[in-house]
Image 1 (spheres, rainbow, N blue to C red):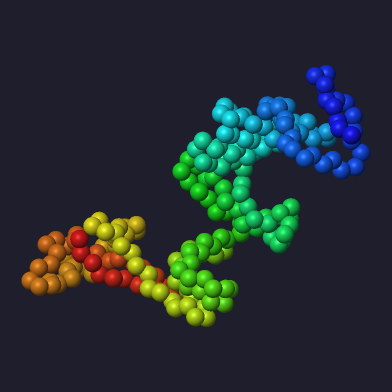
Image 2: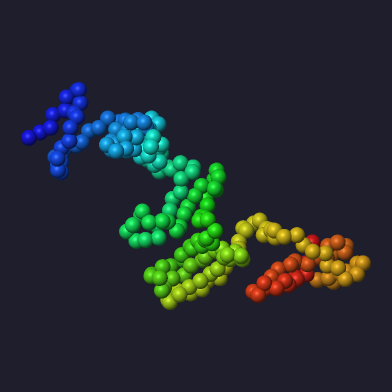
Length: 219
């Protein structure tokens, strides 16, 4: 027995399961009236072509396009105020999420989750949780921020390399005057050195215990 739907529509309920041997064809719909919706949420569902073009589809939540599939540009988009996250439980996306990617601003990607310090890991090799080589960019409550080369099992801790190519590495903190007299000097190397006292400076750094140390430099 088939179901006949006339131009006047069909107003009724099909009891039990409904099996269809062919396609289910629905209207394209709009964001305010999705082509496929739910009886308890008529403004939530699927819309074809929410912004133009047959190769586009939108997931509509309360008339808002929450997920946009753009076949023309091979792109998946979410609104600027939406988060992409992973839940804290396996096989349960409804559970609260503990890892979040967010849009910070135009061309800025954030990994943040309230006051919880975050870590990003880039793997050179990964066999399992006990065998890997990786680089970690991490934050800790109260600091410091860290860039760490790590390994476990069959992995090897690798060197860190900063390579500016043909440019220079720029130190972000201002140098400190050398002090110790009216015209302090660092001396000479190979017969040349700073020509004025103002060129004699310290580069301030912290050791592994967080204690300040000073490297003499001239500029």
